[in-house]
Image 1 (cartoon, rainbow, N blue to C red):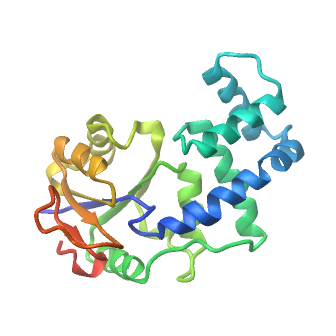
Image 2: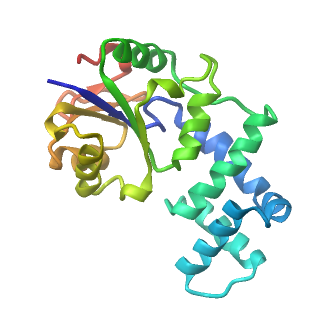
Length: 224
Protein backbone atom coordinates (compact mmCIF):
# COMPACT_ATOMS: atom_id res chain seq x y z
CA UNK A 1 0.00 0.00 0.00
CA UNK A 2 1.47 3.31 -1.09
CA UNK A 3 1.75 5.76 1.81
CA UNK A 4 4.22 8.25 0.31
CA UNK A 5 5.22 9.48 -3.13
CA UNK A 6 8.78 10.61 -3.83
CA UNK A 7 9.20 12.53 -7.07
CA UNK A 8 12.01 13.80 -9.23
CA UNK A 9 11.62 17.20 -10.89
CA UNK A 10 13.43 17.44 -14.25
CA UNK A 11 11.54 15.48 -16.90
CA UNK A 12 9.04 14.30 -14.29
CA UNK A 13 7.02 17.11 -12.70
CA UNK A 14 8.66 19.75 -14.86
CA UNK A 15 9.99 20.19 -18.36
CA UNK A 16 13.58 19.13 -18.86
CA UNK A 17 14.01 22.06 -21.25
CA UNK A 18 13.03 24.54 -18.51
CA UNK A 19 16.05 23.48 -16.48
CA UNK A 20 18.42 22.91 -19.39
CA UNK A 21 17.46 25.86 -21.58
CA UNK A 22 16.43 28.49 -19.04
CA UNK A 23 17.72 27.88 -15.51
CA UNK A 24 21.20 26.55 -16.31
CA UNK A 25 22.08 29.23 -18.90
CA UNK A 26 20.76 31.96 -16.59
CA UNK A 27 22.93 30.77 -13.69
CA UNK A 28 25.98 30.47 -15.95
CA UNK A 29 25.52 33.94 -17.41
CA UNK A 30 24.94 35.58 -14.01
CA UNK A 31 27.46 33.61 -11.94
CA UNK A 32 30.44 35.99 -12.02
CA UNK A 33 28.36 39.14 -11.46
CA UNK A 34 26.34 37.51 -8.67
CA UNK A 35 29.41 36.30 -6.78
CA UNK A 36 31.03 39.70 -7.22
CA UNK A 37 28.00 41.47 -5.80
CA UNK A 38 27.41 39.01 -2.95
CA UNK A 39 30.91 37.82 -2.05
CA UNK A 40 30.40 38.98 1.57
CA UNK A 41 27.17 37.01 1.94
CA UNK A 42 27.77 34.11 4.35
CA UNK A 43 26.00 31.54 2.15
CA UNK A 44 27.94 32.60 -0.94
CA UNK A 45 31.20 32.58 0.99
CA UNK A 46 30.45 29.08 2.29
CA UNK A 47 29.80 27.85 -1.25
CA UNK A 48 33.08 29.32 -2.47
CA UNK A 49 34.98 27.74 0.43
CA UNK A 50 33.34 24.37 -0.28
CA UNK A 51 34.50 24.59 -3.91
CA UNK A 52 38.06 25.21 -2.70
CA UNK A 53 37.81 22.21 -0.37
CA UNK A 54 36.59 19.96 -3.19
CA UNK A 55 39.28 21.27 -5.56
CA UNK A 56 41.91 20.85 -2.84
CA UNK A 57 43.51 24.18 -3.66
CA UNK A 58 43.57 27.77 -2.38
CA UNK A 59 41.75 29.17 -5.40
CA UNK A 60 41.06 32.87 -5.84
CA UNK A 61 37.43 33.92 -6.25
CA UNK A 62 38.02 34.27 -9.98
CA UNK A 63 39.42 30.72 -10.14
CA UNK A 64 36.48 29.43 -8.12
CA UNK A 65 34.12 31.01 -10.65
CA UNK A 66 36.06 29.36 -13.50
CA UNK A 67 35.75 26.01 -11.71
CA UNK A 68 32.02 26.47 -11.17
CA UNK A 69 31.49 27.30 -14.85
CA UNK A 70 33.42 24.16 -15.84
CA UNK A 71 31.15 22.12 -13.59
CA UNK A 72 28.07 23.74 -15.15
CA UNK A 73 29.33 22.91 -18.64
CA UNK A 74 30.04 19.33 -17.51
CA UNK A 75 26.57 19.09 -15.84
CA UNK A 76 28.19 18.07 -12.57
CA UNK A 77 25.95 17.36 -9.57
CA UNK A 78 28.16 19.04 -6.96
CA UNK A 79 26.52 20.40 -3.82
CA UNK A 80 28.12 23.89 -3.57
CA UNK A 81 27.40 24.49 -7.27
CA UNK A 82 23.77 23.50 -6.80
CA UNK A 83 23.47 25.70 -3.72
CA UNK A 84 24.92 28.71 -5.53
CA UNK A 85 22.70 28.12 -8.57
CA UNK A 86 19.71 28.16 -6.22
CA UNK A 87 20.68 31.58 -4.89
CA UNK A 88 21.08 32.94 -8.42
CA UNK A 89 17.75 31.47 -9.51
CA UNK A 90 16.03 33.08 -6.53
CA UNK A 91 17.24 36.42 -7.88
CA UNK A 92 15.84 35.51 -11.30
CA UNK A 93 12.43 34.57 -9.91
CA UNK A 94 12.25 37.82 -7.93
CA UNK A 95 13.15 39.77 -11.07
CA UNK A 96 10.46 37.87 -13.03
CA UNK A 97 13.10 36.64 -15.44
CA UNK A 98 11.21 33.31 -15.61
CA UNK A 99 8.52 31.26 -13.85
CA UNK A 100 8.87 27.75 -12.43
CA UNK A 101 7.51 25.16 -14.86
CA UNK A 102 5.23 22.37 -13.63
CA UNK A 103 3.12 20.22 -15.96
CA UNK A 104 -0.66 20.57 -15.59
CA UNK A 105 -1.08 16.86 -14.93
CA UNK A 106 1.62 16.91 -12.24
CA UNK A 107 0.13 19.89 -10.41
CA UNK A 108 -3.39 18.41 -10.49
CA UNK A 109 -2.39 14.92 -9.37
CA UNK A 110 -0.04 16.13 -6.65
CA UNK A 111 -2.92 18.13 -5.19
CA UNK A 112 -5.28 15.17 -5.48
CA UNK A 113 -2.82 12.81 -3.83
CA UNK A 114 -2.22 15.18 -0.95
CA UNK A 115 -5.96 15.59 -0.44
CA UNK A 116 -6.24 11.80 -0.21
CA UNK A 117 -3.75 11.84 2.65
CA UNK A 118 -0.65 10.67 0.77
CA UNK A 119 2.60 12.25 1.91
CA UNK A 120 4.56 13.87 -0.93
CA UNK A 121 8.32 14.37 -1.09
CA UNK A 122 10.81 15.68 -3.65
CA UNK A 123 14.24 14.21 -4.44
CA UNK A 124 16.24 16.12 -7.05
CA UNK A 125 19.87 16.80 -7.87
CA UNK A 126 19.07 20.50 -7.58
CA UNK A 127 19.41 21.92 -4.08
CA UNK A 128 16.42 21.89 -1.73
CA UNK A 129 16.44 25.66 -2.01
CA UNK A 130 16.20 25.46 -5.83
CA UNK A 131 13.43 22.86 -5.58
CA UNK A 132 11.33 25.16 -3.39
CA UNK A 133 11.91 28.03 -5.81
CA UNK A 134 10.54 26.02 -8.76
CA UNK A 135 7.43 24.91 -6.88
CA UNK A 136 7.03 28.28 -5.21
CA UNK A 137 6.78 30.29 -8.43
CA UNK A 138 4.50 28.41 -10.82
CA UNK A 139 1.53 29.27 -13.01
CA UNK A 140 -0.54 27.35 -10.43
CA UNK A 141 0.71 29.52 -7.58
CA UNK A 142 2.91 28.43 -4.69
CA UNK A 143 2.88 24.60 -4.55
CA UNK A 144 5.49 24.15 -1.82
CA UNK A 145 2.87 23.36 0.82
CA UNK A 146 1.98 20.16 -1.07
CA UNK A 147 5.24 18.57 0.02
CA UNK A 148 6.10 17.17 3.43
CA UNK A 149 9.83 17.30 2.70
CA UNK A 150 12.61 17.82 0.17
CA UNK A 151 15.85 15.92 -0.48
CA UNK A 152 18.91 16.74 -2.60
CA UNK A 153 22.41 15.35 -3.15
CA UNK A 154 23.34 15.94 0.49
CA UNK A 155 21.54 12.65 1.17
CA UNK A 156 23.57 10.92 -1.56
CA UNK A 157 23.65 10.38 -5.31
CA UNK A 158 20.40 9.66 -7.09
CA UNK A 159 21.77 6.50 -8.69
CA UNK A 160 22.81 5.03 -5.34
CA UNK A 161 20.40 2.68 -3.57
CA UNK A 162 21.59 3.83 -0.15
CA UNK A 163 20.23 7.33 -0.83
CA UNK A 164 16.71 5.92 -1.09
CA UNK A 165 17.17 3.86 2.06
CA UNK A 166 18.19 7.04 3.90
CA UNK A 167 15.12 8.86 2.61
CA UNK A 168 12.83 6.03 3.73
CA UNK A 169 14.35 6.20 7.20
CA UNK A 170 14.11 10.00 7.28
CA UNK A 171 10.39 10.03 6.45
CA UNK A 172 9.69 6.94 8.57
CA UNK A 173 7.94 5.01 5.81
CA UNK A 174 8.95 1.46 4.78
CA UNK A 175 10.54 1.48 1.29
CA UNK A 176 7.88 -0.87 -0.09
CA UNK A 177 5.23 1.72 0.77
CA UNK A 178 6.96 4.49 -1.19
CA UNK A 179 6.39 5.17 -4.89
CA UNK A 180 9.30 6.88 -6.67
CA UNK A 181 8.68 8.81 -9.89
CA UNK A 182 11.50 9.66 -12.29
CA UNK A 183 12.44 9.85 -15.95
CA UNK A 184 15.87 8.23 -15.42
CA UNK A 185 16.22 4.42 -15.49
CA UNK A 186 19.33 4.33 -13.30
CA UNK A 187 17.56 6.30 -10.57
CA UNK A 188 14.58 3.98 -10.73
CA UNK A 189 16.91 0.97 -10.58
CA UNK A 190 18.49 2.35 -7.41
CA UNK A 191 15.10 2.98 -5.82
CA UNK A 192 13.98 -0.55 -6.69
CA UNK A 193 17.14 -1.98 -5.14
CA UNK A 194 16.27 -0.07 -1.97
CA UNK A 195 12.82 -1.71 -2.02
CA UNK A 196 10.67 1.15 -3.37
CA UNK A 197 7.97 0.90 -6.02
CA UNK A 198 8.62 2.89 -9.20
CA UNK A 199 7.02 4.56 -12.21
CA UNK A 200 9.02 5.79 -15.20
CA UNK A 201 7.82 9.08 -16.73
CA UNK A 202 8.33 9.22 -20.50
CA UNK A 203 7.20 12.68 -21.51
CA UNK A 204 8.48 12.31 -25.09
CA UNK A 205 9.10 9.29 -27.28
CA UNK A 206 7.47 5.88 -27.44
CA UNK A 207 6.33 3.91 -24.40
CA UNK A 208 8.20 0.62 -23.96
CA UNK A 209 5.81 -1.93 -22.45
CA UNK A 210 8.75 -4.25 -21.77
CA UNK A 211 10.86 -1.72 -19.88
CA UNK A 212 12.33 -2.59 -16.49
CA UNK A 213 9.92 -0.12 -14.86
CA UNK A 214 6.33 0.70 -15.76
CA UNK A 215 6.36 3.64 -18.18
CA UNK A 216 3.67 6.30 -18.35
CA UNK A 217 3.20 9.49 -20.35
CA UNK A 218 1.99 11.68 -17.50
CA UNK A 219 0.72 11.75 -13.92
CA UNK A 220 -2.94 11.26 -14.95
CA UNK A 221 -2.45 7.54 -15.58
CA UNK A 222 -0.48 6.74 -12.43
CA UNK A 223 -2.59 4.49 -10.22
CA UNK A 224 -1.95 4.80 -6.50
